[in-house]
Amino acid sequence: SCRTSITVRDILAASQWQPVPRRGYQCASCCRVFPTLWSVTTHIQHSSQEGYSCKVYYRRLKALWEKEHKEQEAAAPRV
Image (cartoon, rainbow, N blue to C red; front, side, top):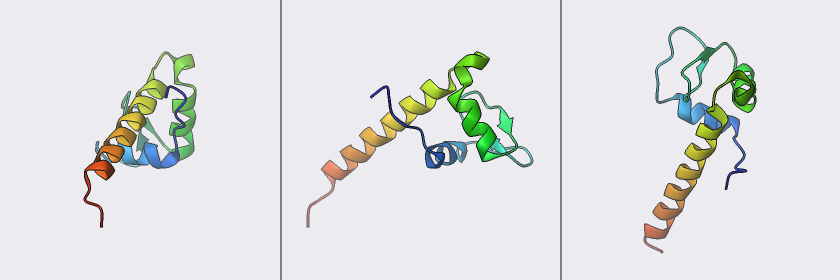
């Protein structure tokens, strides 16, 4: 769904893929580093106004994770 809600947990999970110099949170889409979780969340929500497509990236990433999770559940043996 293109209306997938992006949560703080999604942002943190995506940011674990890339090491961040010093302290902060890195947007996994544009690689910009932000000092607080709130600031990176705000950036993602308003990224189109800044000329970035980070919100689209996170929505697609979450949709892929959800699809993968459903496939893993379907493939798991039932007890």
